[in-house]
Image 1 (spheres, helix red, strand yellow):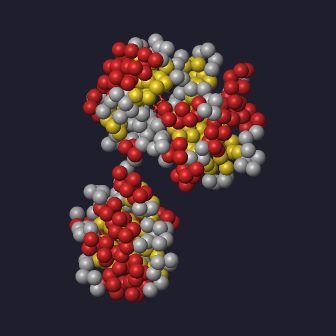
Image 2 (cartoon, protein in one colour):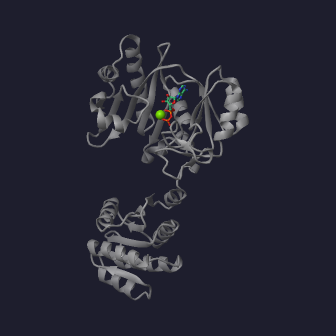
Image 3 (cartoon, helix red, strand yellow):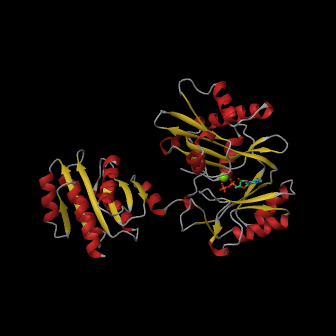
Length: 399
Ligand code: ADP
Ligand code: MG
Protein backbone atom coordinates (compact mmCIF):
# COMPACT_ATOMS: atom_id res chain seq x y z
CA UNK A 1 0.00 0.00 0.00
CA UNK A 2 1.18 3.50 -0.85
CA UNK A 3 0.44 6.76 0.93
CA UNK A 4 0.74 10.42 0.02
CA UNK A 5 3.86 12.51 0.51
CA UNK A 6 2.33 14.64 3.27
CA UNK A 7 1.16 11.54 5.16
CA UNK A 8 4.60 9.95 4.93
CA UNK A 9 6.24 13.15 6.14
CA UNK A 10 3.89 13.35 9.12
CA UNK A 11 4.81 9.77 10.02
CA UNK A 12 8.55 10.44 9.64
CA UNK A 13 8.35 13.58 11.77
CA UNK A 14 7.30 11.36 14.69
CA UNK A 15 10.70 9.67 14.44
CA UNK A 16 12.48 13.00 14.66
CA UNK A 17 13.16 13.41 10.94
CA UNK A 18 13.43 17.05 9.82
CA UNK A 19 10.78 18.12 7.30
CA UNK A 20 9.72 21.56 6.05
CA UNK A 21 6.48 22.82 7.62
CA UNK A 22 3.44 22.03 5.49
CA UNK A 23 -0.34 21.63 5.54
CA UNK A 24 -2.52 19.48 3.25
CA UNK A 25 -5.48 21.08 1.43
CA UNK A 26 -8.48 19.70 -0.44
CA UNK A 27 -9.83 23.02 -1.72
CA UNK A 28 -8.54 26.40 -2.88
CA UNK A 29 -9.82 27.95 0.36
CA UNK A 30 -7.93 25.38 2.43
CA UNK A 31 -4.78 26.04 0.42
CA UNK A 32 -5.07 29.78 1.13
CA UNK A 33 -5.70 29.13 4.83
CA UNK A 34 -2.70 26.79 4.88
CA UNK A 35 -0.42 29.40 3.30
CA UNK A 36 -1.55 31.98 5.87
CA UNK A 37 -0.48 29.66 8.67
CA UNK A 38 2.99 29.16 7.19
CA UNK A 39 5.72 31.75 7.76
CA UNK A 40 6.28 32.52 4.03
CA UNK A 41 7.28 34.45 1.97
CA UNK A 42 8.16 31.42 -0.15
CA UNK A 43 5.72 28.55 -0.54
CA UNK A 44 5.69 25.37 -2.58
CA UNK A 45 2.36 23.95 -3.70
CA UNK A 46 2.60 20.22 -4.35
CA UNK A 47 0.11 17.91 -6.04
CA UNK A 48 -0.57 14.86 -3.87
CA UNK A 49 -0.86 11.82 -6.11
CA UNK A 50 0.63 8.37 -5.66
CA UNK A 51 3.27 8.91 -8.33
CA UNK A 52 6.63 10.61 -8.60
CA UNK A 53 8.01 12.93 -11.24
CA UNK A 54 5.39 15.55 -10.36
CA UNK A 55 7.73 18.49 -10.74
CA UNK A 56 8.41 17.68 -14.38
CA UNK A 57 4.84 16.47 -14.97
CA UNK A 58 2.30 18.24 -17.18
CA UNK A 59 -1.37 18.96 -16.63
CA UNK A 60 -3.47 17.52 -19.42
CA UNK A 61 -5.91 20.41 -19.39
CA UNK A 62 -3.33 23.21 -19.22
CA UNK A 63 -1.15 22.71 -22.29
CA UNK A 64 2.60 22.14 -22.62
CA UNK A 65 3.72 25.56 -21.37
CA UNK A 66 1.94 25.44 -18.01
CA UNK A 67 3.93 24.60 -14.87
CA UNK A 68 3.98 21.10 -13.40
CA UNK A 69 2.77 19.52 -10.17
CA UNK A 70 5.33 21.12 -7.82
CA UNK A 71 5.12 24.91 -7.96
CA UNK A 72 6.92 27.73 -6.23
CA UNK A 73 4.64 30.54 -5.02
CA UNK A 74 5.91 33.90 -3.73
CA UNK A 75 2.75 35.06 -2.00
CA UNK A 76 -0.55 33.81 -0.63
CA UNK A 77 -2.19 35.08 -3.84
CA UNK A 78 0.17 32.95 -5.92
CA UNK A 79 -0.63 29.93 -3.75
CA UNK A 80 -4.30 30.57 -4.47
CA UNK A 81 -3.68 30.80 -8.23
CA UNK A 82 -1.64 27.59 -8.21
CA UNK A 83 -4.29 25.74 -6.23
CA UNK A 84 -7.01 26.92 -8.59
CA UNK A 85 -5.07 25.65 -11.60
CA UNK A 86 -4.01 22.33 -10.11
CA UNK A 87 -7.05 21.02 -8.21
CA UNK A 88 -9.32 18.82 -10.29
CA UNK A 89 -6.94 18.70 -13.24
CA UNK A 90 -5.06 15.66 -14.47
CA UNK A 91 -1.33 15.43 -13.93
CA UNK A 92 0.69 13.23 -16.27
CA UNK A 93 4.18 12.20 -15.07
CA UNK A 94 6.63 9.50 -16.14
CA UNK A 95 5.15 7.33 -13.40
CA UNK A 96 1.40 7.82 -14.01
CA UNK A 97 1.19 6.48 -17.56
CA UNK A 98 -0.58 8.45 -20.30
CA UNK A 99 -3.90 8.51 -18.48
CA UNK A 100 -2.40 10.64 -15.69
CA UNK A 101 -3.94 11.14 -12.26
CA UNK A 102 -6.50 13.64 -11.13
CA UNK A 103 -5.18 15.97 -8.45
CA UNK A 104 -7.61 16.04 -5.53
CA UNK A 105 -5.23 17.05 -2.77
CA UNK A 106 -2.45 19.58 -2.41
CA UNK A 107 0.29 20.04 0.12
CA UNK A 108 1.25 23.64 0.80
CA UNK A 109 4.77 23.74 2.25
CA UNK A 110 7.51 26.12 3.20
CA UNK A 111 9.82 27.03 0.35
CA UNK A 112 13.31 25.83 1.24
CA UNK A 113 16.56 27.51 0.24
CA UNK A 114 18.33 24.51 -1.23
CA UNK A 115 22.14 24.23 -1.33
CA UNK A 116 22.32 20.57 -2.50
CA UNK A 117 20.02 17.66 -3.23
CA UNK A 118 20.80 14.06 -2.20
CA UNK A 119 19.13 10.71 -2.65
CA UNK A 120 18.44 8.21 0.14
CA UNK A 121 16.20 5.18 0.09
CA UNK A 122 15.55 1.92 1.91
CA UNK A 123 13.88 -1.22 0.68
CA UNK A 124 13.53 -4.88 1.49
CA UNK A 125 16.21 -6.52 -0.63
CA UNK A 126 15.14 -10.09 -1.30
CA UNK A 127 18.48 -11.12 -2.74
CA UNK A 128 20.32 -10.41 0.51
CA UNK A 129 17.32 -10.99 2.78
CA UNK A 130 18.03 -7.65 4.41
CA UNK A 131 17.00 -4.04 4.33
CA UNK A 132 19.18 -2.23 1.81
CA UNK A 133 20.02 1.46 2.10
CA UNK A 134 20.83 3.26 -1.12
CA UNK A 135 22.46 6.68 -0.99
CA UNK A 136 23.66 9.01 -3.71
CA UNK A 137 25.03 12.49 -4.08
CA UNK A 138 22.87 12.84 -7.19
CA UNK A 139 19.52 13.69 -5.63
CA UNK A 140 16.47 15.24 -7.19
CA UNK A 141 16.81 13.35 -10.43
CA UNK A 142 15.95 10.00 -11.90
CA UNK A 143 17.91 7.51 -9.77
CA UNK A 144 17.57 4.74 -12.40
CA UNK A 145 19.43 6.98 -14.81
CA UNK A 146 22.17 7.66 -12.22
CA UNK A 147 22.47 3.92 -11.53
CA UNK A 148 22.77 3.27 -15.24
CA UNK A 149 25.25 5.93 -16.33
CA UNK A 150 27.22 6.70 -13.14
CA UNK A 151 26.88 3.69 -10.82
CA UNK A 152 29.96 4.83 -8.87
CA UNK A 153 27.86 7.67 -7.48
CA UNK A 154 25.61 5.22 -5.64
CA UNK A 155 26.41 3.65 -2.28
CA UNK A 156 24.48 0.57 -1.22
CA UNK A 157 24.71 -1.05 2.19
CA UNK A 158 22.58 -3.77 3.75
CA UNK A 159 21.71 -4.28 7.39
CA UNK A 160 21.68 -7.68 9.02
CA UNK A 161 18.33 -7.84 10.86
CA UNK A 162 19.93 -9.70 13.78
CA UNK A 163 22.53 -6.95 14.17
CA UNK A 164 20.17 -4.03 13.56
CA UNK A 165 21.26 -0.50 12.81
CA UNK A 166 24.81 0.23 14.00
CA UNK A 167 26.71 3.51 14.02
CA UNK A 168 28.95 2.26 11.19
CA UNK A 169 25.90 2.02 8.91
CA UNK A 170 25.19 5.70 9.51
CA UNK A 171 28.83 6.58 8.85
CA UNK A 172 28.82 4.59 5.59
CA UNK A 173 25.78 6.50 4.34
CA UNK A 174 27.17 9.89 5.38
CA UNK A 175 30.46 8.99 3.69
CA UNK A 176 28.60 7.94 0.54
CA UNK A 177 26.89 11.34 0.51
CA UNK A 178 30.35 12.94 0.81
CA UNK A 179 29.31 15.01 3.81
CA UNK A 180 31.63 16.36 6.46
CA UNK A 181 31.39 18.10 9.82
CA UNK A 182 27.95 18.75 11.22
CA UNK A 183 26.17 17.67 8.02
CA UNK A 184 27.91 14.30 8.25
CA UNK A 185 26.55 13.93 11.81
CA UNK A 186 23.08 14.95 10.68
CA UNK A 187 23.18 12.37 7.87
CA UNK A 188 24.08 9.62 10.34
CA UNK A 189 21.24 10.68 12.60
CA UNK A 190 18.60 10.93 9.89
CA UNK A 191 19.61 7.55 8.43
CA UNK A 192 19.11 5.97 11.85
CA UNK A 193 15.74 7.69 12.28
CA UNK A 194 14.58 6.60 8.84
CA UNK A 195 15.65 3.02 9.51
CA UNK A 196 13.75 3.05 12.82
CA UNK A 197 10.64 4.29 11.03
CA UNK A 198 11.09 1.75 8.24
CA UNK A 199 11.27 -1.17 10.66
CA UNK A 200 8.61 0.02 13.11
CA UNK A 201 6.08 0.70 10.34
CA UNK A 202 6.82 -2.46 8.30
CA UNK A 203 7.68 -0.48 5.21
CA UNK A 204 8.40 -2.16 1.91
CA UNK A 205 10.06 0.94 0.49
CA UNK A 206 11.00 4.38 1.72
CA UNK A 207 12.48 6.81 -0.77
CA UNK A 208 13.73 10.29 0.02
CA UNK A 209 14.37 12.20 -3.18
CA UNK A 210 15.55 14.73 -2.56
CA UNK A 211 17.06 14.87 0.89
CA UNK A 212 18.30 18.44 0.91
CA UNK A 213 21.02 20.45 2.52
CA UNK A 214 19.65 23.93 3.15
CA UNK A 215 21.72 27.09 2.79
CA UNK A 216 21.78 27.34 6.58
CA UNK A 217 23.19 23.84 6.99
CA UNK A 218 20.17 21.67 7.80
CA UNK A 219 19.37 18.27 6.28
CA UNK A 220 15.65 18.07 5.46
CA UNK A 221 13.43 15.50 3.80
CA UNK A 222 11.91 17.44 0.90
CA UNK A 223 10.10 14.65 -0.88
CA UNK A 224 9.29 11.12 0.17
CA UNK A 225 7.52 8.06 -1.11
CA UNK A 226 6.56 5.37 1.35
CA UNK A 227 4.97 1.99 0.77
CA UNK A 228 4.04 -0.73 3.22
CA UNK A 229 4.11 -4.51 3.33
CA UNK A 230 0.41 -5.31 2.89
CA UNK A 231 0.81 -8.50 4.90
CA UNK A 232 1.82 -6.49 7.94
CA UNK A 233 -0.84 -3.78 7.71
CA UNK A 234 -3.01 -5.49 10.30
CA UNK A 235 -0.40 -4.42 12.84
CA UNK A 236 -0.81 -0.77 11.87
CA UNK A 237 -4.44 0.38 11.95
CA UNK A 238 -3.23 4.00 12.00
CA UNK A 239 -1.37 3.44 8.73
CA UNK A 240 -4.32 1.58 7.23
CA UNK A 241 -6.42 4.71 7.80
CA UNK A 242 -4.15 6.62 5.45
CA UNK A 243 -5.22 4.49 2.50
CA UNK A 244 -6.61 6.64 -0.31
CA UNK A 245 -8.70 4.35 -2.48
CA UNK A 246 -9.19 7.05 -5.11
CA UNK A 247 -5.52 6.52 -5.98
CA UNK A 248 -5.95 2.81 -6.60
CA UNK A 249 -7.30 0.83 -9.53
CA UNK A 250 -11.02 0.11 -8.81
CA UNK A 251 -10.69 -3.44 -10.16
CA UNK A 252 -7.76 -4.09 -7.83
CA UNK A 253 -9.76 -2.84 -4.85
CA UNK A 254 -12.69 -5.08 -5.82
CA UNK A 255 -10.32 -8.05 -6.20
CA UNK A 256 -8.79 -7.51 -2.77
CA UNK A 257 -12.27 -7.65 -1.22
CA UNK A 258 -12.62 -11.19 -2.61
CA UNK A 259 -9.13 -12.17 -1.56
CA UNK A 260 -7.94 -12.36 -5.17
CA UNK A 261 -4.46 -11.19 -6.09
CA UNK A 262 -5.16 -9.08 -9.19
CA UNK A 263 -2.93 -6.62 -10.96
CA UNK A 264 -4.02 -4.92 -14.14
CA UNK A 265 -1.60 -4.97 -17.06
CA UNK A 266 -1.64 -3.53 -20.57
CA UNK A 267 -2.37 -6.54 -22.83
CA UNK A 268 -5.64 -8.07 -24.05
CA UNK A 269 -5.57 -11.65 -22.76
CA UNK A 270 -7.18 -12.03 -19.36
CA UNK A 271 -5.57 -14.69 -17.18
CA UNK A 272 -7.11 -16.69 -14.37
CA UNK A 273 -4.59 -18.89 -12.64
CA UNK A 274 -4.07 -20.49 -9.24
CA UNK A 275 -0.74 -19.87 -7.61
CA UNK A 276 1.54 -16.90 -8.18
CA UNK A 277 4.29 -18.96 -9.81
CA UNK A 278 1.90 -20.53 -12.30
CA UNK A 279 0.42 -17.08 -12.97
CA UNK A 280 3.88 -15.72 -13.78
CA UNK A 281 4.61 -18.68 -16.06
CA UNK A 282 1.27 -18.18 -17.79
CA UNK A 283 2.03 -14.52 -18.49
CA UNK A 284 5.48 -15.49 -19.79
CA UNK A 285 4.14 -18.06 -22.20
CA UNK A 286 1.49 -15.67 -23.54
CA UNK A 287 4.28 -13.24 -24.32
CA UNK A 288 6.33 -16.02 -25.87
CA UNK A 289 3.45 -16.55 -28.27
CA UNK A 290 3.46 -12.91 -29.28
CA UNK A 291 0.56 -11.53 -27.22
CA UNK A 292 0.32 -9.67 -23.92
CA UNK A 293 -1.50 -10.51 -20.69
CA UNK A 294 -4.24 -8.10 -19.57
CA UNK A 295 -3.66 -8.94 -15.93
CA UNK A 296 -2.00 -11.02 -13.31
CA UNK A 297 -4.61 -12.93 -11.34
CA UNK A 298 -4.01 -15.55 -8.70
CA UNK A 299 -7.29 -17.03 -7.43
CA UNK A 300 -5.41 -18.87 -4.70
CA UNK A 301 -5.37 -22.48 -3.64
CA UNK A 302 -9.01 -22.98 -2.68
CA UNK A 303 -10.72 -21.47 -5.72
CA UNK A 304 -14.45 -21.78 -4.99
CA UNK A 305 -17.17 -21.21 -7.58
CA UNK A 306 -17.82 -17.79 -6.01
CA UNK A 307 -14.19 -16.82 -6.32
CA UNK A 308 -13.99 -17.99 -9.91
CA UNK A 309 -17.15 -15.98 -10.73
CA UNK A 310 -15.74 -12.85 -9.11
CA UNK A 311 -12.48 -13.37 -10.95
CA UNK A 312 -14.34 -13.60 -14.28
CA UNK A 313 -16.25 -10.41 -13.47
CA UNK A 314 -13.09 -8.53 -12.60
CA UNK A 315 -11.25 -9.72 -15.71
CA UNK A 316 -14.22 -8.77 -17.91
CA UNK A 317 -14.55 -5.32 -16.30
CA UNK A 318 -11.43 -4.43 -18.29
CA UNK A 319 -12.64 -3.41 -21.78
CA UNK A 320 -9.23 -4.30 -23.25
CA UNK A 321 -9.79 -8.03 -22.58
CA UNK A 322 -10.41 -9.90 -25.87
CA UNK A 323 -10.01 -13.44 -24.58
CA UNK A 324 -9.47 -15.35 -21.33
CA UNK A 325 -7.04 -18.09 -20.50
CA UNK A 326 -7.83 -20.19 -17.44
CA UNK A 327 -4.86 -22.20 -16.28
CA UNK A 328 -5.56 -24.10 -13.10
CA UNK A 329 -3.81 -26.90 -11.33
CA UNK A 330 -6.25 -28.96 -9.32
CA UNK A 331 -4.29 -29.86 -6.24
CA UNK A 332 -6.14 -28.74 -3.12
CA UNK A 333 -9.23 -28.28 -5.29
CA UNK A 334 -10.10 -31.11 -7.65
CA UNK A 335 -10.42 -30.42 -11.39
CA UNK A 336 -14.09 -31.44 -11.57
CA UNK A 337 -15.04 -28.92 -8.88
CA UNK A 338 -13.05 -26.23 -10.67
CA UNK A 339 -14.68 -27.12 -14.00
CA UNK A 340 -18.14 -26.81 -12.43
CA UNK A 341 -17.12 -23.43 -11.07
CA UNK A 342 -15.88 -22.26 -14.48
CA UNK A 343 -19.05 -23.40 -16.25
CA UNK A 344 -21.35 -21.80 -13.68
CA UNK A 345 -19.36 -18.59 -13.67
CA UNK A 346 -19.20 -18.40 -17.47
CA UNK A 347 -22.98 -18.77 -17.63
CA UNK A 348 -23.55 -16.20 -14.89
CA UNK A 349 -21.38 -13.50 -16.44
CA UNK A 350 -22.62 -14.21 -19.97
CA UNK A 351 -19.15 -14.69 -21.29
CA UNK A 352 -18.72 -12.87 -24.58
CA UNK A 353 -15.02 -13.43 -25.36
CA UNK A 354 -13.19 -16.66 -26.27
CA UNK A 355 -12.28 -18.82 -23.30
CA UNK A 356 -9.46 -21.36 -23.31
CA UNK A 357 -9.16 -23.64 -20.29
CA UNK A 358 -6.24 -25.77 -19.31
CA UNK A 359 -6.79 -28.03 -16.33
CA UNK A 360 -4.31 -30.39 -14.77
CA UNK A 361 -4.26 -32.44 -11.60
CA UNK A 362 -6.68 -34.57 -9.59
CA UNK A 363 -9.80 -35.73 -11.47
CA UNK A 364 -8.63 -33.96 -14.63
CA UNK A 365 -10.66 -36.20 -16.96
CA UNK A 366 -13.92 -35.58 -15.08
CA UNK A 367 -13.12 -31.88 -15.25
CA UNK A 368 -12.58 -31.95 -19.00
CA UNK A 369 -15.83 -33.91 -19.46
CA UNK A 370 -17.76 -31.26 -17.55
CA UNK A 371 -16.31 -28.49 -19.73
CA UNK A 372 -17.02 -30.45 -22.94
CA UNK A 373 -20.58 -31.24 -21.89
CA UNK A 374 -21.41 -27.69 -20.80
CA UNK A 375 -22.63 -26.52 -24.19
CA UNK A 376 -20.43 -23.44 -23.80
CA UNK A 377 -17.86 -22.54 -26.49
CA UNK A 378 -14.97 -23.38 -24.17
CA UNK A 379 -11.75 -24.40 -25.90
CA UNK A 380 -9.97 -27.13 -23.99
CA UNK A 381 -6.17 -27.20 -23.94
CA UNK A 382 -3.87 -30.07 -23.11
CA UNK A 383 -0.89 -28.29 -21.68
CA UNK A 384 0.42 -24.81 -21.04
CA UNK A 385 2.03 -24.39 -24.49
CA UNK A 386 -1.10 -25.59 -26.23
CA UNK A 387 -3.26 -23.28 -24.08
CA UNK A 388 -1.19 -20.21 -24.89
CA UNK A 389 -1.17 -20.94 -28.64
CA UNK A 390 -4.92 -21.50 -28.63
CA UNK A 391 -5.87 -18.32 -26.78
CA UNK A 392 -3.55 -16.18 -28.91
CA UNK A 393 -5.06 -17.75 -32.08
CA UNK A 394 -8.62 -17.20 -30.79
CA UNK A 395 -7.97 -13.55 -30.01
CA UNK A 396 -6.33 -12.95 -33.40
CA UNK A 397 -9.25 -14.68 -35.11
CA UNK A 398 -11.73 -12.45 -33.32
CA UNK A 399 -9.83 -9.24 -34.11
P1 ADP B 1 8.66 14.97 -7.61
O1 ADP B 1 9.80 14.07 -7.26
O2 ADP B 1 7.35 14.26 -7.63
O3 ADP B 1 8.91 15.76 -8.85
P2 ADP B 1 9.58 16.71 -5.44
O4 ADP B 1 8.91 16.96 -4.16
O5 ADP B 1 10.83 15.89 -5.39
O6 ADP B 1 8.51 16.07 -6.44
O7 ADP B 1 9.86 18.12 -6.08
C1 ADP B 1 10.63 18.31 -7.26
C2 ADP B 1 11.69 19.36 -7.01
O8 ADP B 1 11.06 20.57 -6.58
C3 ADP B 1 12.68 18.99 -5.92
O9 ADP B 1 13.75 18.23 -6.40
C4 ADP B 1 13.10 20.35 -5.42
O10 ADP B 1 14.15 20.86 -6.23
C5 ADP B 1 11.88 21.21 -5.61
N1 ADP B 1 11.12 21.35 -4.34
C6 ADP B 1 10.22 20.49 -3.84
N2 ADP B 1 9.76 20.90 -2.64
C7 ADP B 1 10.38 22.05 -2.37
C8 ADP B 1 10.37 22.98 -1.26
N3 ADP B 1 9.57 22.78 -0.20
N4 ADP B 1 11.17 24.07 -1.35
C9 ADP B 1 11.96 24.26 -2.41
N5 ADP B 1 12.04 23.44 -3.48
C10 ADP B 1 11.27 22.35 -3.46
MG1 MG C 1 11.04 13.79 -5.72
